Image 1 (cartoon, rainbow over the protein chains, first blue to last red):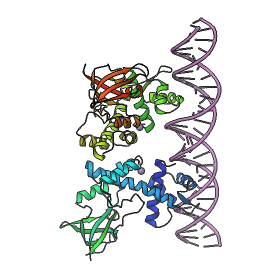
Image 2 (image 1 turned 30 degrees about the vertical axis):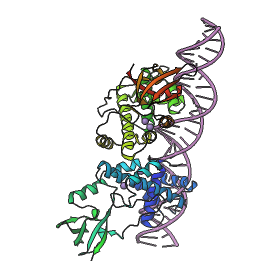
Image 3 (image 1 turned 60 degrees about the horizontal axis):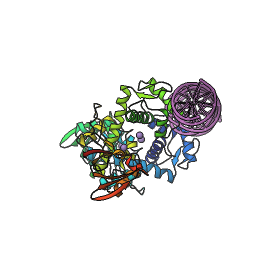
Image 4 (image 1 turned 135 degrees about the vertical axis):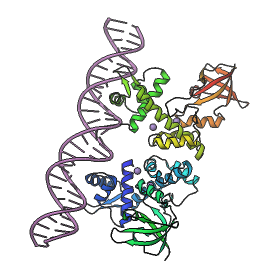
Length: 221
Length: 221
DNA sequence: CTTAATTGTTAAGCAAGCTTAACTTTGTTC
DNA sequence: GAACAAAGTTAAGCTTGCTTAACAATTAAG
Ligand SMILES: [Mn+2]
Ligand SMILES: [Mn+2]
Ligand SMILES: [Mn+2]
Ligand SMILES: [Mn+2]
């Protein structure tokens, strides 16, 4: 049976194992979900019994094809809700994640299809993340790198943003950064790993904490 | 703490105690929620401790002002979602109740206010039920009676409909009855308590099961 | 290689929200 | 008003999803 808890585990396992291109570790998931690591071990066994996950003691957790399908369904619901709330109700891109985190667990396939249709089968959510299709395929994402790893004098376009902290997005709003903003790397400061960029004809400095959460695509360099 | 379960109990207690103008009984709530009556007794104690309910053994359950406020909040969320899904996504009035039954538990006040605003602070949901206002007031409902109790030769307007069974609403669609339809009572048949009405220049016969779930307002008689 | 630190697992226990079974109160009928 | 039926409550127990504490495996250092 799929429950809220299980759906959140699957999402977490998916995002860590694709990020790492490896098994997700107990501790990472525990931190991510703010749950004790013993609970993770426990749940890993249950999900394994249901065939959603491959789990070997001390070896981490990996989604089975079946589990990945389930995870993608939840992610699809999440991202469609985000875009819908923004486009229809005018919520800000810093506000939608929170709402979607709940709504994702309580929408029938029927409703999600209606939303998808209403939005014209969109490929990306408000933070630049791909929206899995109904058949489980994932829209192709541009070749991105972390802004923190961008090179001086090159020009980049902001493609996607970590949506887990609304404060980050509020910060971006304050300094005038949006998806598709063009940035030129002016300088990289070794001392604190901050990065100085030119956006909209203004120079701004971004801390490592910020540049570690922004993904950009090279457009000139 | 408010949980899904508790919100559903509060809603059920509210609807039964207003319907009866009396304390809600354990058995009624148990049937309504498809839960054993022992679970109801249990929960009645918990809700009572939280000050949401007045409960005396063997005497039924009644909402406190505090509990009523909480119940109305859930009902407000439910009905706003229903109308929103119908107006924006084009869901049928037979489809919205199911979805709203889940969404009602997972929407922040912030989101509900946005929906309310988007809809222009509506007074009634797709089934003719009043949408409680943010301050807890309830839009005035017309003076309605059960269609089952309507009198021959009088003319009535369909004001509201029980939304708990989508099959009823599908039936209404099939025979062409909508909110605000005008009906003239042609005949009442004692044998099976069915009622014969004229709508849109056609005569149709409605069983007791149907006429017990439709509320009408006298417009000519 | 041995030791220590880190990471992960097992065990025991708890709260919520149910269930069924046994029992008690209330209501109904004669 | 006694006897039975219906409604309501209590008790015991179950599952889910957590927790903390104790223990085991893995990894990293010296
Ligand atoms: Mn999100
Ligand atoms: Mn979630
Ligand atoms: Mn409804
Ligand atoms: Mn509900």
